[in-house]
Length: 304
Image 1 (cartoon, rainbow, N blue to C red):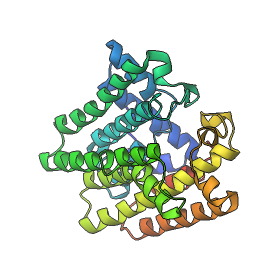
Image 2: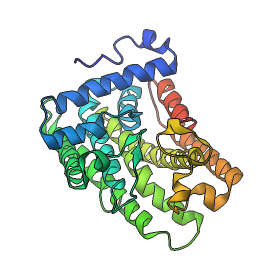
Image 3: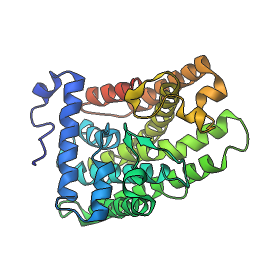
Image 4: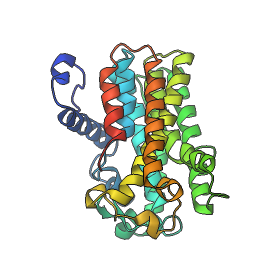
């Protein structure tokens, strides 16, 4: 399956409503991912594909691609980073769901990977996606070596022991206190780090300045907190369409923004970080920022 040309006719694409546009984008991301994990697949590849090709919003690759486009970069330049980001994100979900971690039975409306393929195979599937991501970044013939190295460094930091891994470790151990700052630190690592890497890696593909990268990193982190707060709100208010049982965080005795602050204050906190994200975004000099702003609003105000 050939990936669609996302921005070959920007005026026509912008005439589409956002939902249609995002469906087109997701189909293109899926096609690219399939090219990296083609059939027929080995057993471990099939286990990885089970989670990789489940019903995903593809938020991280979309932000990577849209940031590159907003800075007048070529869409082709950002594709390896976009696919690598989704593989790392999926690996983290597979491992987070394991019995030794969050012990979840449902993900994206389907049984979790270990429920279908067994715990050992799920671990290997996650490991395979993580390592495949870095293979993609290092093996792209169309990417300058300096950009590949920058991508590898950025993604390793976001996914590593001062990023997602640290966030999961804090989550497993539990917060030392019920302080808002500690909650923010947890989710800056667990959620914000990879979202920030998504926009930064897209910007790197477009040759963004160091000043711009700093602003975009701040944007991604603020967006990550707003995203997590919305996720916590949906856990209380949402339905089956969010892909997990309502109040599953409460069932697992997880401290959330809602349980810490209450519903109304959690909504206020989410609005604060949403506005902070837009403030950072508006400080960057973009050529085509409208779609990136629309995507930000869609993700943070989503109902699923």
